[in-house]
Amino acid sequence: MAVAVVFVLATFKPAWLGGWSEFGTRDRGGPAVQVLMAPAPAAVPQAASGVGGVQSLAYAARRAAPSVVSVVTSGSRGRGEGSPHGSEPWFRRFFGEQDQPANGMGSAVIVSTDGYLLTNNHVIEGAEQIEVVLADGRRSVAKVIGSDPDSDLAVLKIDGRDLPAVTFGVADALQVGDVVLAIGNPFNVGQTVTSGIVSALGRTGLGLNTFENFIQTDAAINPGNSGGALVDAGGQLLGINTAIYSRSGGSMGIGFAIPVTTARQVMDGLIRNGVVTRGWIGVQPRDLTPELAESIKSRATQGVLIAGVLQDGPASDAGMLPGDVVLRIAGHPVANTAQLLNEVAALAPQSRTSVSILRGDQALDLQVKVAQRPSLRPRQSDDQR
Image (cartoon, rainbow, N blue to C red; front, top):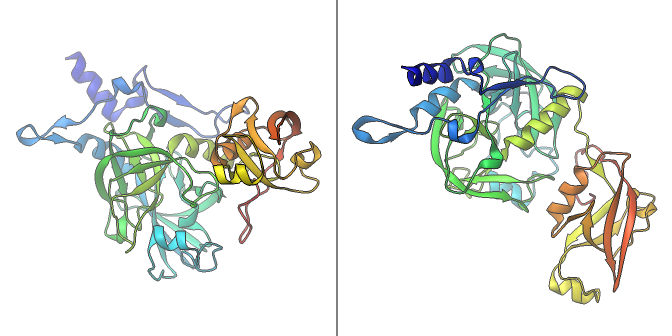
């Protein structure tokens, strides 16, 4: 009897359970919006047996689907048109070479009961009007609270109360092989649920975003799924579906989602300040290959090569030079460009940090005063970190 009561409460009134917690009271030091957080993964109901003993994911779909909405944009340029990436090979490789109409279609996830939504920046970029269609058919005009091209995330707001907000899962607990569902509105056919597994974690170097740490999945993700939810077997949000690898524009079993950890950090910054605050030191990093190390006569076997230093930037003021190899930032080892970028972005602007470098055979520790990363603008190069 007790187990049945707990199960019913977990399904329909999760906030009543002591193991669930609500965060965010708009206090200065707390999150900017209230969200429901999942309990420990072990307490999450997993796939239940269906007809004939076949494992079913109906519980997860039923729980998460009401939180996923369709996004209809009008008056936009269309994906790629007027975009700095529209003619680049990676753009065609990940999204196919289909003509995009003036009206766009994507998905979004309700993250608070009072109407905040998470989606991709590329879903709403350039749109003159944004309409949201809820799973129950209700329609609402949405306004953009803020967008972050560096992470390809955006926050929308619609009017409403007691909306079906998703529960945030624990993306850091994910493992390759875990079962996941992708929920969205592919090809504008209506809300669709697909299933698969986590194929890989921490994918970087795809050239999609400045900041990359993707969850890779074989759950079918197609055009229109962008901005939708990647959820676990308990129906809890793990990521925001963002891109596919495709030669035709359709799913080939390689899709990518932004982890909910990153999404929530960006969301809080956009709601609270309208921008995401990140550190910046003004360098052009390159992955250090054995060939590069040999060409600059460096004995470094790992680290990140500094190919350029912005004049009068933080790194330049600290004495960093082109040809230096960065080994550690704030005591944390960096083995590639993605790690360096993420370590720098995590630093607080106006703070001072130690950067350990190798210059020829000489090891040096530089004290760098971190600046705030400039906002990404159209046709701006992503090379400067």
